[in-house]
Amino acid sequence: MKRRTFMAAPPAIALGAAASTPLSALAAPAVLTPDTRLLPRHAKGPRIVVCGGGWGGLTAARYLRQWVPNADVVVLERNPTFWSGPMSNKWLVDIVNTDFVHHDMSHAANKYGYRLIQTEVSGFDRAKRIVRTAHGQLDYDYLILAGGIRDNFEGWLGEDREAIAYTSQRFNSAYIPNARMLALKSRVKNFKRGTLVMTLPPPPHRCPPSPYERACLIAWHIKKNKIPGKIVILDPKPKIGPIGEGYRQAFEELYPEIITHVPNAGVKSLDPYKKRIVTAAGEYDFDEAILMPQHQAADMVWHAGLIGKTEQGKPTGWADMDPRFYTARSDDRVYFVGDLMGAISPQFGYYPKSGHVANAIGKIVARNISERVAGKEVVARLPDNLCYMMVNGDPQEEIAVKFEYEVDKASGHVHQTQVDIDVRTTEMVKEDFAWIKGRFDDFLF
Ligand SMILES: Cc1cc2nc3c(=O)[nH]c(=O)nc-3n(C[C@H](O)[C@H](O)[C@H](O)COP(=O)(O)OP(=O)(O)OC[C@H]3O[C@@H](n4cnc5c(N)ncnc54)[C@H](O)[C@@H]3O)c2cc1C
Image 1 (cartoon, rainbow, N blue to C red):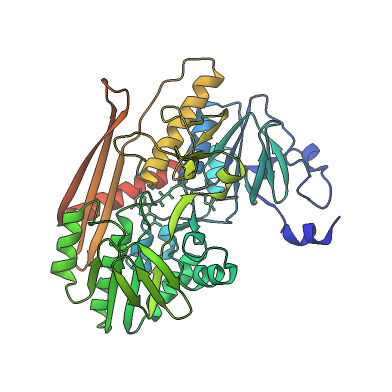
Image 2: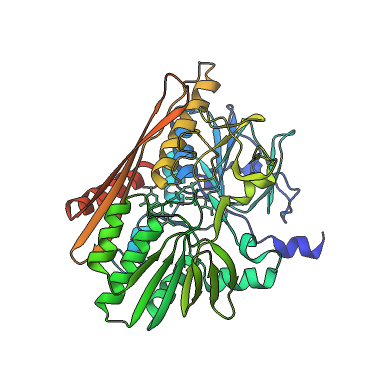
């Protein structure tokens, strides 16, 4: 075995229900390589491999076990524990503690009876229905891609790998769940004076209202601790949105000395070492920054060769999928769940890339697969969306946005209705905490 292969592959940790793997399955080679066959089958039903154990993947796994009881459901997840994006802005400024956003995943695997393996998904052989991981291969009957997003720093920094690594390490926005969330929290705590710049990506991006929530809560922390600091939000959009009016009022009424929102400020270039950023709306020097480049579908969709193309033949950056059934257009054994999903409708483009939608689609895809396995007609189903955003820490006050979807009979396209709730209230805080409890109870606890 090549030394590099060995070095690249930390031990695979089989968590949760994998503990009940029969002894025959343990007769595997002593050292795992990317060519090792992982987890021989022991269920009579189909094997469904879920790549990514976040909001969407864990929901799909839970409901697949419920609705396709004879299926062998395997979740492949690179992180050892679950970090939630929702509520993480509140955690950054100590409104909720770490136990609120950080959870053990093996509990849900044991409770619902799917197998959870900590490993990196590295590629696919779709013709043979095989997933490749850092620790071996798995075959599948149905594949669910639920890997969330990736940061496209190349869009700013080209092929300068050193500058990309430096920017990603030093100014990461922690919009992808991992230990960078901890690093961001200590950067916020260590911000003692000067200008903090936040860049927003161009749409579509993960949880559209949440960067503004983050700005409000860091501004609240700055105000509370009398830190001589300012926040400059560099927004590529012409105006704030969603919940634009609610955020505008929060910026002006609660943080007039702290937050400056700059519209039409798409990033043109960045010098992370000199801490300077050039945008379409001017140049900015910063002391600290939370830099969010363009978001794209996670690497796994690119590895699977399932990224959509524009009419000009360029990659859309998101999965190429049937908007009614969430399957890949070129391979109906592959389903997409969560933020990596592609365009849905000419009216609004993409579903909001939210935990609420990932949870809803996880359930819908599990239902669709159950109908398919049972030989029934698969019914097209639509999600809804709901996002609560805290804008004030004392008193705690929130605003919200709701989205509803229906199929427009005339055009056959999905139609979106958006309702912004711009008036900040303490009641909405209660609704938010009830919402997150409901979601976590659904797929995690
Ligand atoms: C600050 C912030 C606030 C937010 N607030 C809200 C909110 O209030 N309401 C709301 O609904 N949404 C909110 N969101 C959005 C929400 O977090 C995401 O929309 C949701 O997590 C999407 O679910 P997902 O399953 O697609 O992706 P994720 O939850 O990110 O899960 C993807 C999983 O795939 C794993 N993975 C990726 N690639 C690989 C690989 N190659 N091998 C193995 N594993 C892999 C990742 O480690 C991850 O665990 C917020 C997000 C952030 C960052």
